[in-house]
Amino acid sequence: MTSSGPDPTIAFNSPPFSSLSSTLALGLIILEQDGRIVHWNDWVAKRSGIVADVALGKSLFDLWPETTQARIRFAIDQAITQGQPSLLSSSLNKYLLPLYEDPFRSDPVQIRQTVTISSFYMTARMCVLQIADVSAAFARESALRVQAQLLNESLERQAQIMKQLENHNDTLDSQVRKRTAQLNELAKHLQDVSEEEKTALARELHDDLGSILTAARIDVFSSAKLLAGSHPDIHAKLQRALRYLEEGIQTKRRIVEGMRPTILTQFGLAEALRYTAEEMAEVSGWTLRLTVEEDLPLSEELSLTLFRVAQEALNNAAKYSEAQCVEIILEADEHTVRLVIRDDGKGMELDAVHKPRSHGLAGMRSRVEARGGYFEIQGAPGRGVEISVSLALSQAE
Amino acid sequence: MIVGYQLSDLQRETLAEVFNIAMGRAAKAMSNIVNEEVLLSIPQIRMVPRSEASSLLGGPEQRVYSITQTLDGEFHADAILILPQARSMDLVRLMLGSPQQLELVTELEREALTEIGNIILNACIGTVTNLLEGQFSISLPVLQSGLCGDIIESHAARQSEEDVVLLLQIDFTVEKHSINGHLAFVQTVSSFQALLARIDRFIEKAAQG
Ligand SMILES: Nc1ncnc2c1ncn2[C@@H]1O[C@H](COP(=O)(O)OP(=O)(O)OP(=O)(O)O)[C@@H](O)[C@H]1O
Ligand SMILES: [Mg+2]
Image: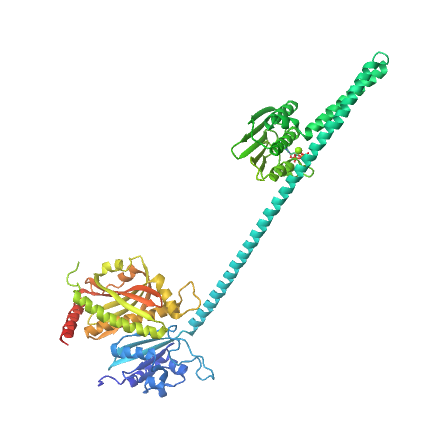
């Protein structure tokens, strides 16, 4: 190539260009068309361990034989022959040029580098290699990747623990459900047993004690009649004994009735509710509002459960509510029977349900829940109390 | 419509052939770098006014990466490779074999994408400059990310003349992952007419030889 311009080797290695180039924070290599090195800045000298005097005039491919077959050779050719510039990234090209942090160490560390290769015209097309050290960016990114990896792992672990917890919760849940069902079963059994015992006791009281008292009353009555004229003082005593016996018989009847309400077994729930409620309303001076469906298809157990709830609710209303009006609703649809007892009295704090030695409300709830039913109490001071109960008509047994 | 910049079928076929040869070379260069099979092809070539280009590139609102190299000499043109943002980083990461994927796109990943774009652009620019047989200076690649419309808009040619765009569709496949990109040569109508004249001469020469 004939040239009429300045000699590039001189131009690039004397001031001001050489002084400028030595201050650069990147590597600068300039090649002639045949690959001969015409400039080699201090940055490159320091990291290659090759001083400029040794490099200048040599072919880059002789000085660094490892570049001969590589992509960098191709890019240099492309720049020189076609003027096409290239960017060789550090991540797609692992080790581009043999440049090191400290080339004279026994185990030198090669620097990560981005090389751009371009060309310009002087006397002929010249090729410029600019080398940037991106080791710091590399270190930063691998640290970032390690962090991301750790984060991912800990997220995965967390997810695993959450899952274990969930499983554990599920197990606990189903255990609680099982135990609750068992307890309900037990409560129901105990109530049934207790009702049966009451029934048996009631029968014995009625049959035995009842007949004894009645027989005694007949005897005393006729004895008193016999002695009325002759022994007025004994007659008076026998009259008193008769009254006592009468009271005993009444007491027995009341006890029997309480244990096994015959009104319930004979006339059904609707009638039993009406009778009981009217009796208590009279004593307490309530206005009664009854909405009671007749002839519901209720099993004996179900009727008894509902009757006991009503009894206790009415007892409580009589004892505490000071109500003007008490309302009872008994209704049913295809599947469910519902009982509501509502008063307009002074109401209560719902915490009172948990009063020690108070078993009425707790008893209602356990009776109902033992049969798989739903029990709710609503009330606030000044707003009356409402007890509502729903039970399935056909017992799943 | 601006008259005089339509491609004849023969011109189009000739361009497709020379560009596809160049893509074959670029694909081979990339395969060597990443040790994976890389496929590059140009299924379609079109000429459109610059104002219509972005709608053909998936709409002006599409988020893209662009890698641009500028051609200066007998005429001026911007060669812009446009890749959909969502999928092209996946492709880069596949090529880099990064073990741990990060949420953000790192500087070095952007640099690798720039190099990939540079290889494709050089192959296409080489084809054009060979056809034109002129002296050109070509800039280093510059990566941008943004909306397709904005990027096309920012590459208006220097003259106040209306620009046209030679639009090459590029199918880019690495392993089983492939993306659809575009290479746009934005130039003035007169530059383009010079190119057409060269193509015709090239066709004539080929016919004679
Ligand atoms: N209708 C009501 N009006 C106002 N307060 C009520 C009413 N029903 C219940 N309470 C309040 O709730 C408390 C708890 O009632 P619960 O029936 O459980 O127990 P108790 O009546 O005190 O005792 P037990 O019923 O066991 O003989 C009562 O002591 C009372 O203070
Ligand atoms: Mg009570």
